[in-house]
Length: 439
Ligand code: NAP
Image (cartoon, rainbow, N blue to C red; front, top):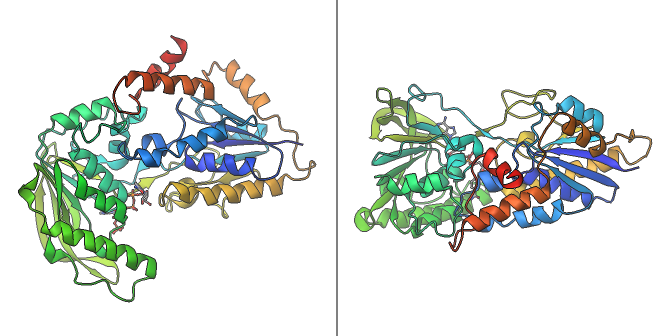
C-alpha cells in the first residue's frame, strides 16, 4: 500500500527528504506543504542574493517536485489553514522541515532601539521575503556594526557595501538595492566576541571580501595571533590557518584604497546599544579568550554607528501540536523521530548550523525510518493523504499554489528582469504573487 507522507516546509531539508523518499525503495506519495507561494526556503530567502551558484541547487529540487508522486501545496499555512493534528490524521507520516526562521535575540540593554535589527529580518528584507519587506531599515548613517562572526554576519556586511554594478547578477530585492545604493554608509564594523581563531565564518566567504568593487577589508595586526595552536582539532586548525592568512593580507590593506571599508574587530563583546530612541553607538567590553571562552577584561570602548545588525544565530518557533525544547530551540527528537508517524529534519531537528547540503543526511535518515515504519501494508492505515487534504483546503477556501503556479510566478519574475543580467526581479508580497496567477 502507498505510504502517504506530508512534508511541512519546502526548504533544503524538506526537498532532500522528498528526494530520499522517492529513492528509498518504497511506494510513497509525497506532499510538500509550504506557507509561502514560493518554494525553496532559505535558498530563496536566506542565501545571499550575490551567491547565485549556491542557489543553483534549486534546479535539483525542481526535478524532485516534478515527479508524479510529489505534489506541492504552496500558500498553505499549517495551524492556520490546516492543523498539524489534522495532517497527522490524513497522512501516514508527517515530516517537520520548518527550519529556524526567527532571530536569536540580542538581550543587551538598548537592543530594542531603532536601527537595531536581527539578521533573519535584515537578510529577509534584502532577499525580498514577504515577512520582512516592510522592515525598511534606516541606512542613513555612515557606519554600521554587525555583531557576530558567522557566515551570516559576513553576508550582511558584504551586502551593505556592494554597488549596483557588483549586484548586476544578483536577485536582491529592488527596495533593498535602492536603499543600499543611496546610503551614505562608508564603514561596517564586523565584530566578534572571541578572536580570529574562533571565528565561525568559512574561508571562501572571508576571501570574497577581498574582491569587492568598492569596499576594502581591514584587519588589525595586533589582533592576529602569530600561529594557530598545535592542539586544535585538525579541521578547525585548517580553517583557522586559512582565515588567519586572509586576515593577515587584510591587515596590509590601505583603508583609503576604496571608498568603503569592512573593519574586523575581534575580542569585542557587546554590552549595550547607546543612544536615545535610535542606536548611536555600540558599547563593547574588550575580551580575551581563555580555554575557548570570551572573558571580559574590564576595558570598554564604543563604536559610533546608526545601524546595528545582530547576526548571532537563528531560532526555530514552536509548532502547535508538536513538542518543543525551548532551551535548545528544537523539537526534541531521536535522530529525526519525534512521535509515532511524526519526524523532524533540518534546523528544527538539530539547530541552526551547517550548510545547505548538511540537511541531506537528515532527509535520508528520516526517509529510511518512514519506509521501515510503514513497510507492511498492515502498518499503513490507508490514510488518504492528498485525496483528503485537497478537498478540505478547497472547502476552507484556501488558494493553493501548485508547482505549475509557482513556475508561472517564476516566469513572471524572470520576465520582469527584462534584458538585465539579473536572474529575476522578485515579487516581495503574497498578493503580488497571486495576482500573477489570478489576474
Ligand atoms: P553561526 O555560524 O552560529 O555564528 C553566530 C555568531 O554569533 C558567532 O560568531 C557567535 O559567537 C556569535 N554570537 C552568538 N551569540 C552572541 C552574543 N550574545 N553576543 C555576541 N556574539 C554572539 O550562525 P550564522 O552566522 O547565523 O550561520 C548559521 C549557519 O548557516 C552556519 O552554519 C553558517 O555557516 C551557515 N551559513 C553558511 C553560508 C555559506 O556557506 N556561505 C552563508 C550563511 C550561513 P561565538 O562563536 O562566540 O558563540
